[in-house]
Length: 302
Image (tube, rainbow, N blue to C red; front, side, top):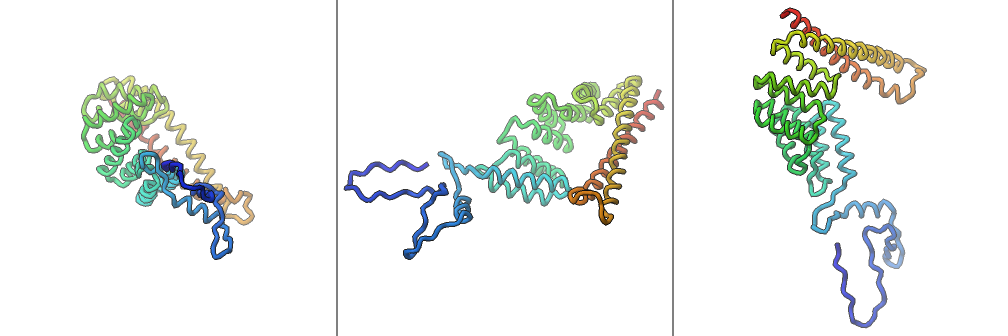
């Protein structure tokens, strides 16, 4: 913020209009007696070059640019290109307020985790939490990394903190149950798996984990019931994904034909939809097969 100029007591001079660098009504520039008007592009270029600061001298950044670059990075993560995503996230930090943004750090953690670099991923989640201590998703993801590193007590602390912030997230309860299961505390694991299922009855992983916990407790009747129900759920999902895959294949075939009735957008998206449908179908089939094996195993035990 500019300090107001004190009123001078000197003899009056011709008034001079101060130019405001943020105003689009800037007076034309005079050169050699010829008035040269700036184009809108020139003015916008000057505005973009101005580095805004708040009263404390802290850079205010460009939030829109940060969001745009994060969206690009997220799309690259989804496409399986974490290195390219990291480049976008690092560029986003150049436009972030004072060079820091908890969401950018969080996304960088996801990218490093996708690369298998757990230590770097954990460091990014910790940076996010320094800025936003109540960041439930960052606490959850950091807890998962500590679990993978077999630092179970740290994992439990982070996951419990995440639940305090966001008690309605079934995935965090499932993750915490997994940690207790890895520590050998099957009773506590079962409690968290059951809470995850209550929050989201169609949560396949949590229901499979709950059935296995019942099985380890020797409660074979309820384990069989759990596995039987989850088998029906996964079978329905598998059949839906199979239909989606068939429709995607038909769309790709139509897109290749001359005079196709499909719109340009449909033809353009056909290949991407086929890839997504194939991946979803494989995942659905894998979960169905696992459910079937779990049910068979508990029936053999009985």
